[in-house]
Length: 166
Image (cartoon, rainbow, N blue to C red; front, side):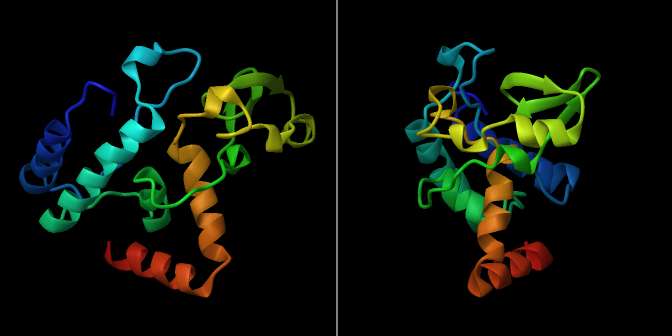
């Protein structure tokens, strides 16, 4: 979802996909700033947090299945902070293993081990790299959400219940 996308349009799409098409769920994530896209098209962290608070509230009220874990939803709405886990969803392309993440290419590595050894993972994510400041990409933060859920019995049970019931 990009900056100019109105919340009402997203909710209308969710209604259509749920009630007309009959899908089981949908992935909705913000249009985040990164080097290969015009920043005027994307949202800042504050902008996507505001939009996702409304989307989550209405999706719950109307029974739309938003395929984002509870912890990731809390992150998108600004209720929780997460560190990025670029290592959680690695990209391989015809040239090799892309690092550090899906959006940023600071290196291409011939082997998975070379990628793991060649990246300074702690240098990435909001607060560490200015290119990451407004990013909230699911491939970097859903792994963090899963990692955080695994560290708590309460969060593990909550994630399991969400997985089973939506």
